Every structure is written in structure tokens, then in C-alpha cells.
Image 1 (cartoon, rainbow, N blue to C red):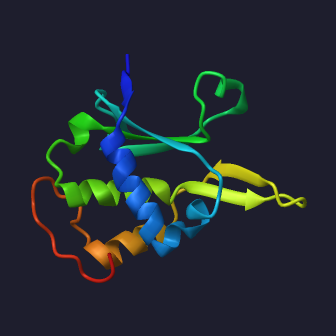
Image 2 (image 1 turned 90 degrees about the vertical axis):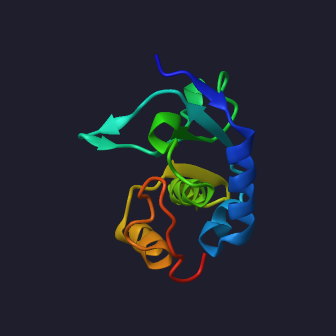
Image 3 (image 1 turned 60 degrees about the vertical axis):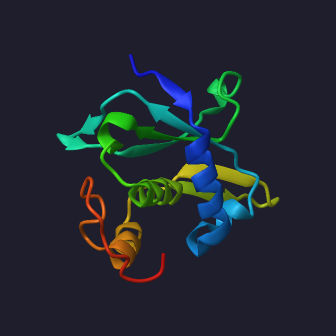
Length: 143
């Protein structure tokens, strides 16, 4: 069973990212609520290690999960990452938070799929090996 717990440290990092990263302006200006979780579960997908995951909460589950999104980091998969690398994982997951507006101006939330721009942003700023466990890396630009 995948036990998940609220992680205030991740929430603090994410709040700072939302306030400072231009790419997250839509989240900063919205009413979207996000809960940050840590999982004891070791997650993989198609044989690849999953560091984090963003999920939109369906309406029918909001009675139990009072938010619009959850972002989960999988502890066994990130245990060798530095604090800066964890920030990058959170930035990556926050880039999946999608916000659009209906004709009346009401917010509608969705999960953005991975796209080239997301990966390009991370690679341009942090290099191709930013997620190499336990190693320092040089911030190339921005960040």
C-alpha cells in the first residue's frame, strides 16, 4: 500500500517557487490549492524511476481530499538528491498544474502533460544531468 503524508517542507519550497518563478505565474494568480505529499512507495513507470507526480483531484474525491491538486515525491527515489535537486523536481511537478478560464472567467483546473518546453526549461537552466543522485551540478542560467 502506498502510504502518503503531508510534507510541509515540500510545501514551503513550492510556495517559494510559486512566488519567484515566472513560469508559475498562473498558479500564483489563481485560487488553486495544492497539497504536497511524501510517499514511502518506490514508484516506477515503464521501467523508469518516478521522482514525483502531480495529480488533479476529481470532484467526487474532494470530500476526502480538500484540494485541487496533489504533488507527491517518492522518498525512496529521491533520497540521494540534494535540496536543490528536490526544488527542481517540485518545479517540474508544478509545471503540470494547468489553469484555464471558462466564458464567465471561472477557473478550470487540469494536469498539463509533459512537453518539450518543460524539459527544455529544466535542461537550459540546470543541465542534462541535474537529477544525477548525490552529485553537485552547475546552474547554467536562470534559476
